Image 1: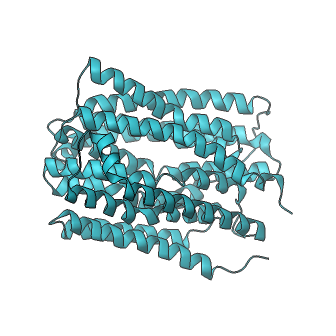
Image 2: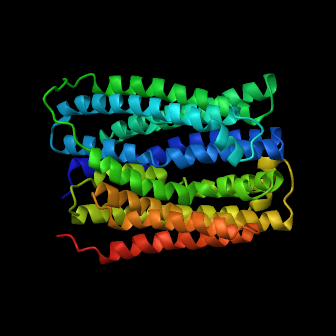
Length: 415
């Protein structure tokens, strides 16, 4: 019989899925606004900076998993009084890390702008401050996730996306139609997310007494998770940045539009993985209940990805028309469909990786780092056309899923 901390997988998944769709709609509206308002060159700049934010931000999921893992264990062991101390300790670490990131980013802004063929350093400077603030978003998400405060987690996860779109809409029509407009709206959305996260923590923990004698832990887990998620971040987000590096600005802009539309399939399983994580947390041993939760999550995720990818493949023409205001030609249609199905396996990889991290196992997920190196190296060598990039992406995407599935099948059966 499962404990109360393992109840409600479907109910909580539906809650986060519904909330996530609000954020997804705002993200789609934001991308539509940018694609329709910006030139291909300006959109290529914006998309490349957003891809850098995602490449840096996705490994920060290690922070979410580390915080959520420790908070969930404390809750499971009936030591909720220690959570406040743990979160304060992480907040101090993040404040210092954010300062270091901003300082390094400012120092490297000019060579980064040159590397991506940007006309000025301003997009890089804004991106640096966004990355510094983004550190705190997974911190709040992890704390709320570990405490299974899913309504608060749902609201926190969408607040920045909603405000980003509304502010971008305002700035596009009152200030300028440039990449800086989108990045400014993104930065203000991050600030709003931090403010809301502080309030959410205060509300959820106001009945808990503070603890001053609890030893801080979780640093090693965080570093291992960071290593794994850095590999996954490259697999999921590096395509636009790589194309921006090796292709012309116009080609990079077109690819960025196709990739942005297609990659939405990747984010569909995120709520399911987030709900599953605190329900299967352990120190390395699986139970039958854990495996049962994983099986339901896999079936739910697979159905979601297959149905969504099929619908998007069939409706690529109207989808492109809605986003860009234009009709796709045959080559663009093929490009969108290829990126869509090339990235689809990464959605299930994300779920299985989260299960392994929740179970405190890193062997198979660490292979994702090797695949990330293969991805970057392959594209650096072979980039004469979009097809070359997508062949490498397809290989590493499918390989990532195969590695995770084989590891699951070889794992000892729980008792």
